Amino acid sequence: MSAERGHHLVHQGVWHRPELIVGSDALAELGRRLGVNQRDGRQDCRHQTHRRQAGEDISDHAVPWCLQHACAIERNHPPAEKGSKSLNPKRFYAIGRIGPIAKRSSATPEGRDGVLQALCARQRDRGRFDRSMIRGADVRMTFATVLSLALALGAWAGPAAAADFPDFVASLKPEAQALGVSAATFDAATTGLTPDLSLPNLDRGQGGPTNAGQAEFTATPAQYLSDKAIGGAAGRGRALLASLRPQIAAIERRFGVPGPIVLAIFGRESGYGTQVGKYDAVRTLATQAWAGRRRQEYRGEFLYALKLLQDGVVSRAALKSSWAGAIGMAQMLPSQYYKYAVNLDGSGRPDIWRSTPDTLASIANHLKGEGWRAGEPWALEVVAPRGVDCTLGSPEQPQAYSQWLSAGFRPVDGNGVASSSARFALLLPAGPYGPGFLIGTNYFVLKAYNFSDLYVLYVGHLADRIAGGGSFATPWSPVTQPSASALAAMQRKLAALGIYADKIDGKAGMKTRLAVGAFQKARGLPVDCWPDAATLRRIAAD
Image (cartoon, rainbow, N blue to C red; front, side, top):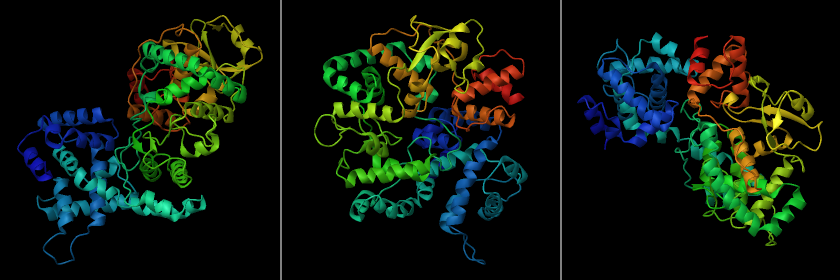
């Protein structure tokens, strides 16, 4: 459907089902650019629909995004020369999409054009839009405005935003050549390359973090650590343990990493080799280097992906990845292939795409390289004493194992560790609503593979199950997980209060949960270190 047809339907009053006008993909993209997930993007549009029917204007938080794109058009398609009676057609098209953006402006395109120029001048001066300048300009944008922008999104916002992508990729050619990538290989891989703007959580005007595509940061512990799912994965892992016993024994001797741990990562990362990614790795890594939230890191990974092609390690057709650029059955980044990949099956070159022995050995070498300590557990599930203070669960407060025992913590399997002086920190991933763990060096080695507590708990527990262990002794209670945008807002407020000093990433990680507990203690509230909706409201009101 054309933008013009959709705009006509809008003004005829077709408000209650915006996805019928613009399609769910456009609304999902709009949702991402407003800093919410795809489902919430559609819900937000419906919510604003009801507000529009009641005679209200759309909420201010949508305005900065809309005007950023309007100003991009203003910069790229300036008005006609002074004295001309007509506007640049592309500029007129953009302004038409903006609609009535100021109460004091006339209904003519020229009147709207004047307001747009003033707002864009403010944007250039400040470097960004904020709500105060919007209110200062007496600007209100209706739902029709945002819906019209969603209609036009596929026609102009994406291409305009991606205009500098080819130049960015071309600028990396000298660095690629310094890494040994020939001009011919670079050109063959990058000619005609376009950014993949469907990747989640990019950083080109989409708002704050969304954690889209990352179950480790959106699921609750009970959901992510489903006993049924882990039980099924453990069964497949035990079958591989039996069929690959000689190779796994060789891996254990060479790298000092238990076979069940290696198999658990293999299972979690690629479903034991069945899920190696569907994205074009070159395109994905180039997009992440250009528009991701860790651009400098991905810049290097893109170059190493080209090196894989230069060295004949893998064909371009086979070089698939996850949306985050992880490759092969081990789901390593390209630079990690060169650092950790191992040839175990005797073929002469490490192959993490087709060789299970090579993949397992490469995973083990990765863990060894990150500091795995042979003979030590990945963690110990413990029964905490009643009323334990969840703010003790900090990696910065390790104690000797004997001290934890003296404080009333008991390992659930009745077994201790080899040395009572070994130091562990306490981890309470869901506060009082789930199991507790004593974690040491090997826990953080696993976290280097994927920086998520839930990921480490999944892999570690799956390894225990592959080795013959049972379910968690303490069950996970149902809890709610706030959205990434809500968590990011909470992190900013806690930072402003001087309670939180880590990055604003919209994740309920270890340090975020500790900050919640510190706030609760400081305000005399019940302390559970869990950021549920009531806690977020209380923090916001402080």
